[in-house]
Image 1 (cartoon, rainbow, N blue to C red):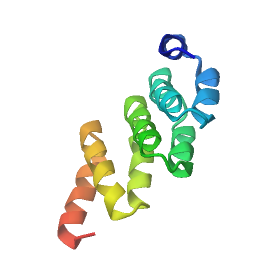
Image 2: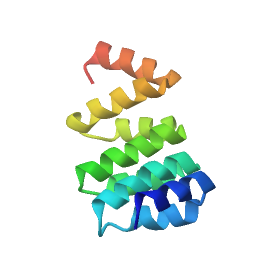
Image 3: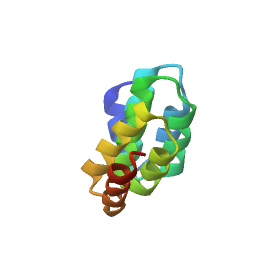
Length: 116
């Protein structure tokens, strides 16, 4: 499947086709492209979160986070941030800052005050 087709699905808002590609883990590179395109097309943050949580592939996880950022799902990234280990926490905090989430500043203040 070509990158152009994934881009066309995103432009057309074909969330169903993109979700099918995003759930197919047989080609992690294509899966990552579909996850980012899903964010563009207005895909479900819950779907992106589910794929993020279930994947062991770093590229797929990063693409799922990018899809959430593109789609404006800062509330879901915040939930993921609260439930992850230290290594992943830093990456999510950086993403939340880039997303401009209002709640992120409360989390930053809390983290700095308590060290958590």
